[in-house]
Image (cartoon, rainbow, N blue to C red):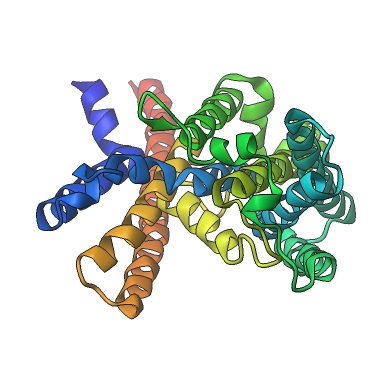
Amino acid sequence: MSGVSTLLRRREFGVVVAIGVLIAVTTVISPSFATGTDGFRNLLLTPSLLMILAVAQGIVIITKNIDLSVSAVLGLTAYATGRMFVDLPGLPIPVVILLGVGLGTLLGAVNGTLVSLGRVPSLVITLGTLYAFRGIDIAWAGGDRVNAGELPREFTTMGTQTVLGVPVLFVVAVAVLAVVAYVLGQTRSGRELYAIGSDDAAAVLYGLRVRRRVFFGFLASGTLAGLAGVLFAARYASVSSNAGTGMELEAVAAAVLGGVAIVGGTGTVLGAVLGAVLLTTISRALPTLGIGEFWQQAVLGALIIGAILLDRVIAARQARRLRSSHASIAVAPAKEAVT
């Protein structure tokens, strides 16, 4: 019973229920939403890229930081991937993919170096690199775009291909989730990121290499954003300088909705991924239900505010429980001494 009770109290469970209810209601009103020819496939394919960005954002937020440049990294690596196929036609596809992901790692290293060594708030640094990376992309691409006819068919097929009815991009996103969830939950390095996010000053006193861990957090974020950029090029087969615009806020929203505390230290990448699925499902469901674009934005905003308020309420309750527990421990020896 305690296991069931614990499961019911988890934020991830509530998000799963919300996704299920939303899909069920929308499918009853419009059966093609989930049961149409491509309904199930689209439910999995649409959130795949945002799932990867949400994992990237979740890693950074857990360390009490934020990475607003993930969308610009995605856009730059997506365009670079397309240009490599156009300008270096003899380059094997796996090599292009590795170079694209490597570019994301390099951009993540820039963020990590500036934040960890410069000791400047990550909000300021990544807001600056968001514009810097996007500016490089615009200067490079100009009004040009890479079109589907310029990309290898084997590469673009990867963006829509399925395995047993499941899109390959969704499989990649789930694999990323599994690896990162294992590292964060089962390894010492991963647990140290939570410790840093909970109290970075205490982590320093404990002897943790905070700046190094934060650097690797941004390195991982850049690498995953680079992977998302490569997959973006494969998914849409047409890349311009505005690829991924606005996805940085969607990634933050997904992480927060999934229970990753914006103040760091708590939450899971599984929750961030479920938040991404909920966001994209809402975006697809509301137009189907005949709800206008204004109300779509209003609903998303209300969900984000509600998630943050819920986090604050939960944090306050946990703090009260800790204070109560400490008080009980302090009173017990005193009673024993009296008796």
